[in-house]
Length: 207
Image (cartoon, rainbow, N blue to C red; front, side, top):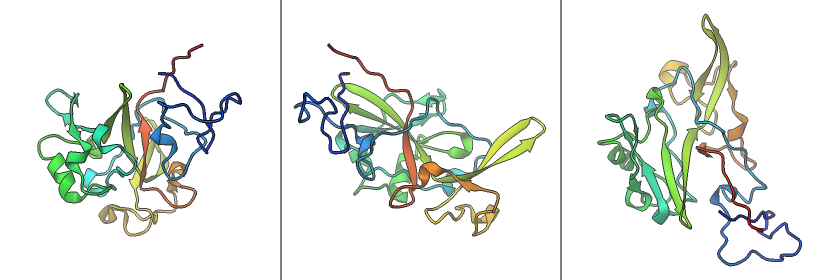
């Protein structure tokens, strides 16, 4: 993969180049919610203790993905892994976001996500022959809890007003000892969640 570093106006940082060359595309991760200078990416797939059920989370936001080149990767419980071929995004959507009906259809035979069992929503994107995997982390607040086995992180999934989605367990107000993770505090609005790369990106330098 040959890459060119650009500014927030998509102009190359190399002073010898005034415009982005034909054939290069700005990675969509840098254009979500405005043009970003860069992003922090997880070096491992996240895991948490004390998960709540999957029915109490905000559905993944699919706006910004190329529907013709994005696949929903489904979890196969018989093999304990994600299928190499999932559902093409344009086949599962109507508009920019997934509805509950569409999610039920996707999860009919194979799970897309079930956070109670630490199954995460994954998508695969293909661009210029390169494959990338992404995992959706829904908006949450957290607290650290001391247990006999050591310290763990307990999380509560919340809406964009920071109210718990599982009202039966937590009520309608976030407990005072929970902190909303700063990754979900967008510049202009609170985010439903974030897509994170499942691996550290690599580049091939050319002379």
